[in-house]
Image 1 (cartoon, rainbow, N blue to C red):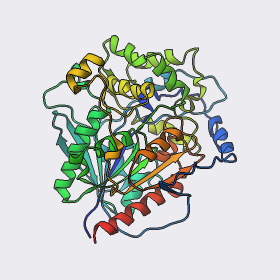
Image 2 (image 1 turned 90 degrees about the vertical axis):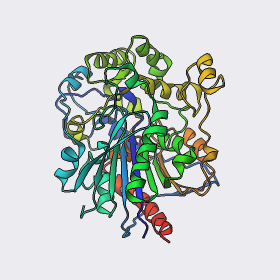
Image 3 (image 1 turned 60 degrees about the vertical axis):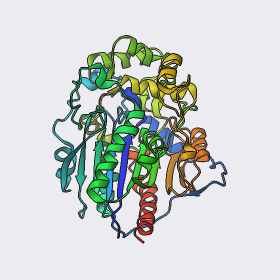
Length: 450
C-alpha cells in the first residue's frame, strides 16, 4: 500500500478575541448555553437540497485500514469557553492573569505523556520563518487536536486507527521557532495573514512531508485551517502534493457571519484602530490585549456567555476541562491576519489581502485584490466536508456557497445541533463526526494504493 499522509490543520476562526469571561465557583451542571443548545436539537432544520453533493447523517461504522497522517496545527487565538456560575462574572483580565501558559515543546507537553511516540522536526519557509512539526507514530495509540482525552481528541483517535500523525505549527505560534533574521519584536515579523500561511507555511510543510515519505498528503482542517486549505488548493504547485481533503466548518466566505461579538468588532473597524495604535502582534495574554477585550464587552455585548457571542451555540463541549485548555491557549497572531478576516466579512469575498486601491495596483496590477478561484480546484480532488446548523462563523449560507463553487463531488455531513467548536473538541464528535471522516480517508487510502 502506498503511504498516505494526512495533513490536519487547526486554525479556528474564533479570532484573536475569543476569550470568554470565566465565572467563579462553577456548578456541577452544564452552563446555560449548553442547555439552550440541547433544546435546539428538538428544532432540526432540513439541509437545503443541492444536487452537487451527497449528504450523510451519522451512523455506526468501523474501520480497519492502517494509514499515515500529518496534523498541521495553527491557532489564531484557539479555543474559547464559558463556565457557568451562580456568582458574579470575573473579568477577562482576571481569567488570563491567572493562566500560566505551559512551556516546552508539544511532544513533551501533550503527546508523549499520553503514551504516544513523538519526535520534533522543523522546516524553513521561502520567506524565512522556521516552523515546527511533530511526528506522532502509530501505536495502540497544533495542540488543539490533543486537548481532550485520548478517547475524544482527533489527533489521538487517528493515531489509534493506525495513522502516522504529523503535527505542524505555523508562524507566530508558541510551538514554532521564529525567523532566520527577524526578531519577534520587529514589525516585519508580524506582516502576514492567512494568505501567507496558505501559500508559504502550508506549502513548506507539505513539501517536507512529501520529501520524507514520498507520498501525497491528506489535508484535514478546521475553521481558518479550511480557509488556508481552500486557498492553497487553488495553487497547482501546492495541489500536486495533496491526495484529498477533509474540512470541518469549511470557510471561504464570511459574508453571513452572525456572531454579535465578531460583527461589532468588524463594524467598528477595531483592526484598523489596533494598527493605528502601532500594534502588529495580537497577544491577549498581554495587559493591553486583555484591556481591549474588556472594553469591547463593557456595556455593548452580553459577555456572560462570550463563546456563544463569538461562535454561536455549541452543544457538546466538556466544560470541566476549561482550566486545562487555558494552559495552552491562546496563541499570538498578527493584526494583519485579523484585518484580512474582517475584510472577508465586510466585502463578502475570498481574496488576497486588500492594501487599498493604489497599493493593490502596484502589487497586484489591479485595483482590487485577486480572488482565490475555487473553480480551479480540480474535479478529481476527493473532498469531505462537515458543518453545523448552530455555527455563527461558518454560517450555512456561506458554506452552501462554497460547496456550490467547488467543481468536485463533495461528501457532506450536516449536524443541525453542532456549533463551531463542537467539531473540534465536542465530547460526541468521535461518534458523530470522526467516524465518517476516517471512513472517507480509508476509502481514498485504498484507491490510491491500487
